[in-house]
Image (cartoon, rainbow, N blue to C red; front, top):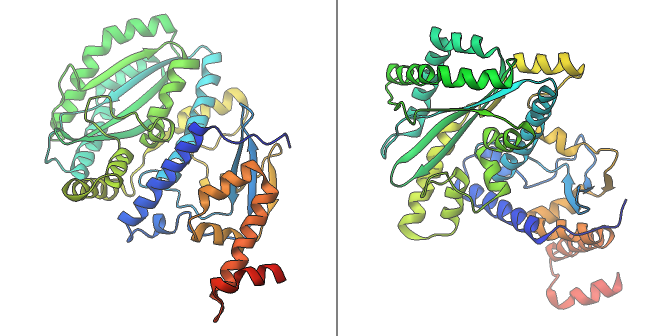
Length: 392
């Protein structure tokens, strides 16, 4: 293992904010068993618990607890959402870069519709989903796909909220096309108006309204190594925006991502706090059980045909976190010691200690667990703590 270099202050800030939002989400939704138990304890029945140290590309050391319980919810959990967004981005980027070497073209599309205050998010999502189905089945839209020589898509849902306009729900699609880059740009110009009209028609059929100018956005992504892969963060998960750039909100002024709503709830009081709590709860309830990210099987098959490698479209989060890669360093620890860390809200401090000096961090946690046990013994008090530690 290389010499340990602590994480930069910027990454520490992101970690602390994610952990802060995670605790606030658990407080806000005590009825949600998944997020309530996420990160609260170590599951050591089938896996050896401990700490995994990873050296990042810039030479920093990053620690994570092996065996920690995770809910895997990309919608409502700030921690798991950020982790799954990173997973999905890496998977999508691998597919895009492979297809780029084979001279495939990429078309980026965003499907949105008119929204206003008072429109419930659940109803908006249902109607938008119906509009997407109508659009996919539309003969003119299918003909455009044929003209583009469509080979598959990466699809993701995204949402923002503003007090002025309410919920803004939209779908991003990145189409991979076999047609030459120059030809597809000409096709986009030729068929753009047709696609916009068909999307407007699909929205009307579903009880929504989409303007020709702003309902459907379509453009070619010219440089997959930069533009497209950068957009995958947007496609894959709204949480990714929070996990990578907490100060960034929606594209329009006043629009907030769901986890920025949660952050505002955490940092305000009174009427505004209650308002943010209600908005966030509506988001959680409306998105429960829905798919947030998808790479269609046609695109998966194309990637495997080109590379000869199997690719997992949405790998299990807990399994990925617990896996120890050859280049990583694993330090086993007792599950009871790690549970003391988690149950006493020392998670961030413990990780920072591990990244600075893993041996000292382990001794600190073990001593804390021991003292906690002694305090639980009847008759033990702070007055005789020093005597017991000395005797030990």
